[in-house]
Length: 365
Ligand code: GTP
Image (cartoon, rainbow, N blue to C red; front, top):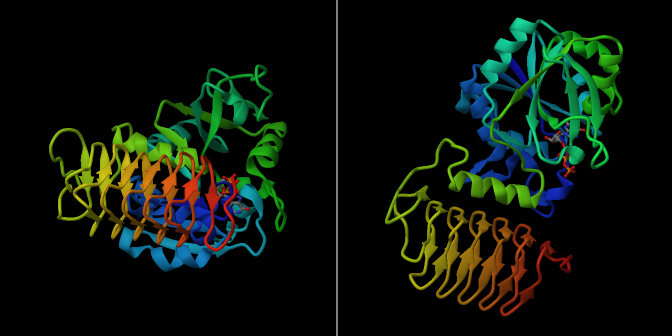
């Protein structure tokens, strides 16, 4: 079985994190997001993955190589210009040999891909689309289908209050190779807006697979943080999270050192972390490998990537700090702030809520 994973987007909504790291390589508990997706594909019986890349592809290839470490064969196809979600699939056509999965590269889900394949084998249509139910479909693409699951209509981002249904496109498809004939080559084409509606107009049989799985698009900072909270709260099981339960509540630790004093559950502590005993870390703290947190610092509901330095008496709440960030002593960082790689926050600085900080540039709010 083959899968195409779409990883060519610039990830503008996750900036400044995605200036230095392409969205698929953004870590989730110390492991790049895409690596977790690929492990899930492998477990579902997929042997070959085609990565439709474009933005910072070298960072992806340097980490994943030929895929053998994950038990997969990975082929990279890099777009010179973004071709859109369908154009990217057309661009890998020469590698497709049979029915194939397509995954948006930024979806975190517990979807059972084998069950999706079984449904496709029963329905024998042109494809199956994973749908989930959401409270507010206006931000998504609504998909209308009959009782047998046959899709009749796509309504992209319907106006609030006029949504035709609460089931939305969840960004995982299982498609027959003949779908490639419906996508023009060498141009920007969207599968949601162009290809699927055109196929329906031509009478093609596309089927819905609606599930109640965990599902989150991690393409925005709030969702990226939510993904961490959800895993810490046990709403989604992730592989490779060593369970080092210490004291009460849930702690995870990647190293052997256990959980330092002053860490409050739930929390994840990476390898080689140094936390001063007088610091207060957590609840909901993710501390990446090699990160140091100084005396009396307070860090809660925050994601720290690798090798971050938090000096004494600084307060951080509800923020995301990329690798190599240094926060000077006594600085305060407010909720919703995202700080890019290697940025330096001066001692005693007051960073307002929802700030975006890139190394060497003025802060933006
Ligand atoms: P934003 O810039 O924040 O909207 O993120 P994005 O560029 O990743 O776009 P979006 O979240 O809508 O993309 C959904 C998925 O499709 C992501 O996994 C993207 O990497 C991927 N994607 C979007 N556009 C392209 C494209 O032109 N080519 C390829 N290969 N992948 C794409």
